[in-house]
Length: 440
Image (cartoon, rainbow, N blue to C red; front, side):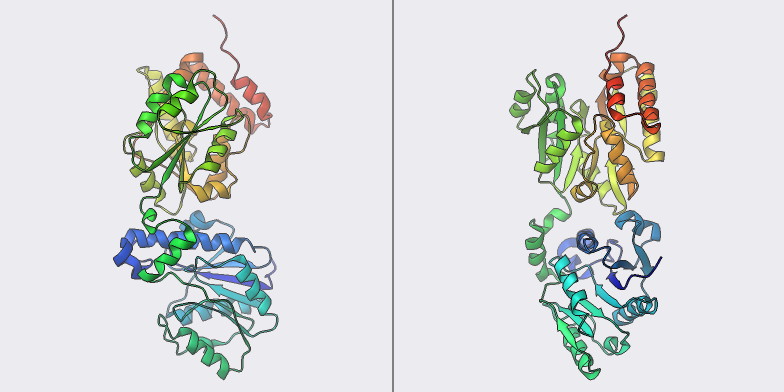
């Protein structure tokens, strides 16, 4: 593959508690500081990807295994470990590498600047058409961006890294080298406790939400009045959880039951995928949990959700499955579902899928298809990251199996999956799935 004429280098570290954003640990704790670093890195990559195609993106890593980085940030990027030495040596070695590979313009950024925009990056590359050096000055006396079109190792020598003298010393070196310089607008890096107000302003939420991000539970319904009250009662045992019921035209009192329970109620065209996407569009939480109306969550589900999603490599979480029945055959069905989920990473919707809002939006939400919307979402997410199960199972109703019979239901479900893999249109599969049971 030909080397792009432009390269964006992103220097960052793996969000390991105790090793990331260490100057913020006294304020946020080791876990909170690591979570802030994770959010900043992911936000920076969203910004960087908007210009992908006009430049190549190279991630210079510190800590973490290559597989962890790919699961966290995606497998379509070039990952390289940072060199040993101080920041200046690491920056210089990264820049030298891409310049020697034939790149004409190099822009380097960190992941500490929430106000960085695609326009800043475009401005930096544009300035390199006429300048030798581009700098994005930071409020703390450093810089959030550096751009070069030639190798100048002297720019990184003798700099008091980590102090408020970094920018001024770099400009002094540039003058000594007779380099033409363009400076971008000044922005704020998030390095110290006093910088957190800038992050809160940019993020639109308090930094305390990093440790216990809000969960939005989204429940699609259609004629679910019989069991919805018990489902909602279990959801609402948790504090600071948003509960959204999206109804697809019920005629049995489902809407009234949801309103009486205090849930936020929305209405939508019928279709589980469509309904869940409508709920997600209105949700305010950082985490989405999609729950079937006949499925009961464990009492400590928020803690389990947070625990699973704290791992940066996990893109999707779900719960193990239990079926509310004494029938031993349904115990065997649940066992098979859990083995498939653990070893193949393929949980389904009745296992209460949950994920970060940003992951959900990045894949475009649920495909609005008449069937298998959960299977397709899991496939989309599993290509980019890992799927993990929580510790305690959800309990789902046995009604689906009781309607058609345990083995007949299991056989039908497998036929639907095989039909999809063989290219049978989803509309036909949906008609097959919803056929009434034969009369006896």
